[in-house]
Length: 245
Length: 245
DNA sequence: CGTCCTATTGACTTTCGTCAACCAATGTGG
DNA sequence: CCACATTGGTTGACGAAAGTCAATAGGACG
Image 1 (cartoon, chains in turn brown, purple, blue, red):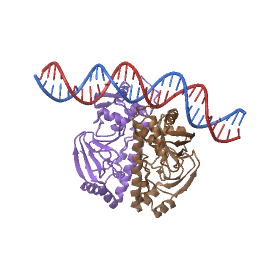
Image 2: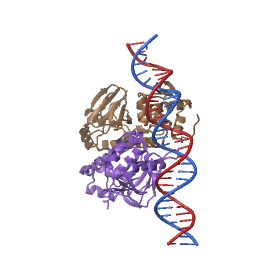
Image 3: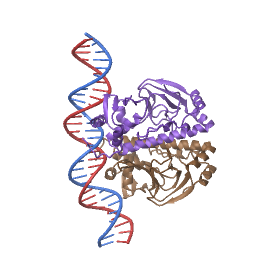
Image 4: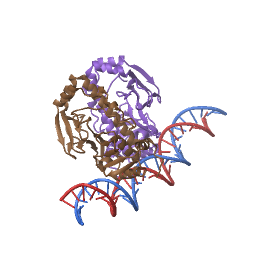
């Protein structure tokens, strides 16, 4: 199913363009790079809803997702949680700053991750500058993705945020069945709400709004059929004025 | 005043901790690295309110801030602008993805930037792996800062956002006069509002809210005296319930 | 068939955006 | 030097959006 340890710079663009750019050769590990990394890493298997590390812990390891989905979250003193990212195969997480993790990592569903001592990765990188370039690329991509989320959270309404989310996840092969246009989400509504920076109830209302516009159809609580991907993209980009009931 | 081309991983932490970590030796350019970079870059001088590049343009150059402040912004199709970051000395901006800029860069005030062809930076990095590590570090730091903003935009009220902003800018030596506790902002209210993801009016109300709590004092429209930095930090972190008038 | 848990809906409150008016600081022309 | 216009910032009033709390519906599972 998955092909071992991989680092992939996801293209999370405006969904109209699901081209194969992400498979650009310079952004993939060579066979031996992959083997070296994998030899220095431990493969861990988790069930859903498990904590990999907690916010504030001392950080010794970096993780590479092999399979499943990990939620990277931060909980402030006000007890409200913000999910920063859902890490999927090809992503890495657990980059320390000042020696500790700034956020927590929990499995959304059953997942497999490679764990590597941070120091070890440093050593490997020192010997292989090409790997550094690849990492740099991945970081740049993650940064851009984070910026896209800043825009979403900063200027978009709750319906627009939901549309962004659906489009983002529709580009993940593990979630989206292209032929039947079924989007199967491994996460529950609270996770979704905390990702979108709104309350679960508001998210539910956003869902019915999109349903009423015939853009999505509810197969079951965790599965939607995407009826009009272009329409979703218009919602995402469009201003919040047009209220076609 | 400033010391040429520098790449600095800012520490933007919770303000209580303005330690000197940012000056860690492994995060600074060596004398010759600095000279090499500077020799391959052009120093440009701008006045305030000028555009350096626009969203969507082909991207040939990377920029390093020497002096002043640059706003990195993104304008969606809905005509609403989100400011992603204010770049200050030690920051870089203009990293391309797929060959074009994903956001615009304009000077907030009079500024000096070093401009370097992107390809050139690649060549220089290829010859100096230590520089790659430094860049990687900088990117990791920027990513973390972006994540902090996601949290701010996702779960904080407009007053909390303003408090975050004030604390963030109070850690910039170019803006904050430590002895008199004067915070001098080069930006106007619209910029501030677009950074905080709210309307200028809401920002004005947030300012008066903090003024009423005696946490800040208005010296003039663009200058505040920070009366209680710890109180600001409590507001920033605290839940939004306590409404002490 | 009932129980438990999640998701949705409804009613109400709070926050925030919007439009308009107002104020203050700065600049201009007489 | 002063009337006056202009710009940027603040305040007020109102409406729209989203949060909150409570009630209800819908599945999964025993």
